[in-house]
Structures are given as structure tokens and as C-alpha cells.
Length: 575
Image (cartoon, rainbow, N blue to C red; front, side):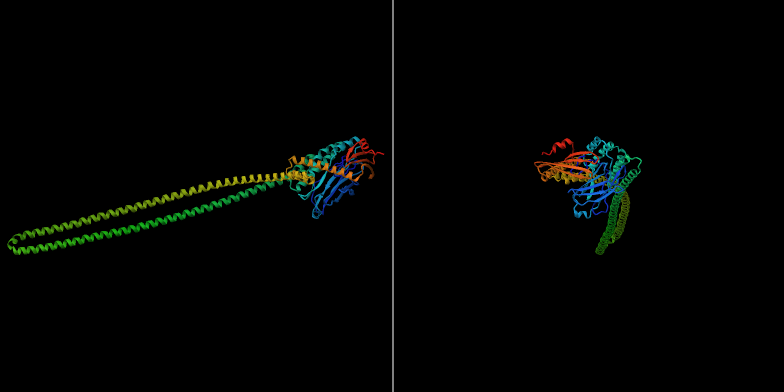
């Protein structure tokens, strides 16, 4: 197996694992509570070696339940190596980098991975094949400062699934693979449920159910997710319905208020109109009365004038008659003889003239009275006709006003209904447009966050801040899980980190050891370890020969597997 820059592995180890996502519990710092199994049963006596970045080791042993636990200090990186003689080895990387000491006092996190160890194959060829399959990191927990949780490397988990199938086939543990796949899916789904990521949870429970169709648990959880989604949809629909109802009530209240205002206005206008008409009728009646009185006064004045003129005429006629009589008497006295003859005639003529004048006067008075009576009757008839016409016109005007008011009310009601319908349609359209704009805005915000995360990662890569770059790319991947770019960027960062660490590693060796070949021999458990450090100029290479207690011998260069010939050729000690 290749030794990664993050941790050392035992040369006889092949790593398989089952990972449970991080859960939060009440602990003073980041904590791991793992279980080691073989064939699905607890494996006691397994050795758990936890090594920090400074090379300090903490050795634990699993109990009868196969369990172990450890609290991790903040701001450091650790390699967890789980092994037992005759079994494969299980490796875990755990990082608390970025978690400060002050923040760790309030931070709580619990990781509960299950590790399945398998018996080692007997032939060297199969072991080499397993080494080829597992020549990469298998599992990684890291502190996510943005979420303030300990996350697992999802990309690493996903890529390992295919390798597990190959390893299970080589080691003859296919049934255990199904169990591991099932538990992995259940763990991922349960963690997603805790964060309410129902889409991921549903996919993982579906995967678990496909692995073990007879299991009821994933089916019940899928039903639970469906109910939660249905309840959320029902609540959203109810909220929308209530919002629409309130909007309609508001519109109806506004329409009712407008209708009342218009009715009040119409009533006021009608009252004003009726008052104006009554005032007009009263004024016309007053004017008519005044005209009638003026006419009567004028007629009385004319009558009095005529009577006065008649009296004057009568007086003049009487005076003339008296003067004529005096003249007649005088003439009769002066001409008695002549007068005596004409007296009878004159007297007759005078009497006839007086009679004629009386008749003429009577006739004139009768004609005048008849004319006045005719004029009066004509005026009264004209007044009756005028009043009848005014009454008919008033009745017609009232009927026309009532019809106009009825038509206006019908039109107002029709307009109100049409307006309410138009307002409702407009409100629905506005709501749809608002929802559309909200979704577009949400998509823009998501895209902006995604672009910012990628840009931040790219900037960090330029300044070789690979840890922060990887965290940014992981954030981008969580925002858009279907996008391939973040995964590709993460692989590039991992490669750059690998190169940088190898470069630092070789440079540190050159600084620590002298030029040429330096040999160191030590023991690791029952294994003999021979290290040969070859320094040429500013570059140093670490060659390791590991001789196991059961006879197998492995060779490495800078933690990569090599052949015995390469080891001997490149580390030959010149005497």
C-alpha cells in the first residue's frame, strides 16, 4: 500500500472502512468513538495508533465490544491506524486544523466510524493486487470552519465504493461488502436527516434499500421523507391560499368602500339636485305670484284710469249740456218766439242724444267687461296648461332620473364585478411573477455563492493556501452537488498538496541527514524496520524495508511501494 503524506501505514495492511457522518453531541472538543469488527462482529485486541503532525503517538486497544475512543486537540492533523496481526489495516485521517483553542472550548462533535478488518490472503500476488487497489487515502474527517462542524470527505467516500467492491472480491468478503454498503448508506442518510437535507437522505435510503430489500428501516424512513415533503408542500399551498384569501378580502373591502363612497356621492348629488329643483319651483311660483299681482295691479290701474276718464268725460258732457241748456234758455229768452218753435225739437234731440250716449256707454262697458273676462279665461287656461306641462315634465324627469339611476347602479355593479375579476387576475399574475422573480433571485444568489467559492478557491491556489482552497471547493460542491468542476478542482488541489508535501518531505530529509546514505534500524511491534535515507544535494529520499513477523518483506521509497532490486540499487552503501 502507498503511504500518503497524511499518515503512515503498516506494510502488511490493506484498508477497508465504513464511515458514519459526523453527529453533534455534548463534548468539550472533537471526539471519535469507533468500533472495529470482523465478519460483522466486534473485534477485540485490535491496536489503534493515533499519530499527530509532530509524530507523537497515542496507542489504544479495542475492548471486548471492539470499541475505542479519543478526544482530539484543536488545530492539528492526525493519522489513525487500526491493525491486528493476520488482518488488514484500517486507516483514518482526522484534522482539526482551523479549530482554535478558544473555539474548541465551546465546540462539540462526535464521529462514530465502524471499521471492518479482513483476514489477510495467504498468497503474495493477491496482496499486491490489493495494494494496487488501495494505493490512495481511504477516509478523511476535517473541521469545516464555515459550518463549524467536522465533515467527512464525500468525494473520497464516493470514489472508495468501487474500490471496496474490488477488494471484497479479492478477499472473498462479498457479503460483508453488502452489509458495509448498507450501513454506509444508512449512516449518510441519517446524517442528512439531521440537517434536513431530505434530497440526499432520500437517495441514500433508496441505495440502502436496494442493497438489502428486506430491511424495513430504509423503507419507513423513505415514507417519513415523503410525508415531510407532502406536509411542507401542503403548508406552502395553505400559506399561498391564505395569502390569496387575505388579498381578495382586502380588494373586496376596497371595492365596498369605493361603492359606498360613490353611493354617498350620488345621494348627495341627488339631494342637491332635488333641493335645486325645489328652490327653482319656489322661485318660479314666487315670480308667478308677483307677475299675477303686478298684472292685477296693472289691470286695476287701467280700469281706474278708464273710470276716471269716463267720469271726466261725463262731467264735461254734463257741463256742455248745462252750458247748452243755458245758451238755449238765453237764446230762448232772447228769441222766445223762435225758441218756442224749436223747444220741442231740441228737447227731443237732446233726449235722444242722451239716450244714445247712455246706450253707447253701456255697450262700451259691456264690451270691456266681456274682453276682460275673455282675457282672464285665456290667462287661466294658459296657466292650467303651463302647470299641467310642468307636472308632466317633472314626472318625466323623475322617471328619467330613476331609470338613469337604475342603469348607473347596474353599470356600477357590473364595473365592480369586472374590476374585482381584473384585480384578482392581476393579483394572481403579480403573485406568479413575484414567485418567479424570487426563484430567479434565489438561483442568482446560489450562483453567486458558487462562483465566489470557486473564485476564492482559485485565489487560494495561486497563493498556495491549499487547505483553504480545498475548503472553498468543497463549499462550492455542497452548493451545486451535480457540478463536476468542484470535484475536479479538489483533485487538482490534492495533487498539489501531495507534491508540496513530498517536496517539503524530501527537503526536510536533506536538511536533517548528511550527504550520502544513512541507515537506521528499529522495531515496530513484531516487525523489523530498516530505513535508508539517501541525500543528494538539496533532495533527500526515504527508503524503507519492512520485515514482518510472518515472513513477508516489503520495500518503499518515500512511502511508495518499490521492488527489492530498486531498494538495493538505490540505497547501496559504498564502503
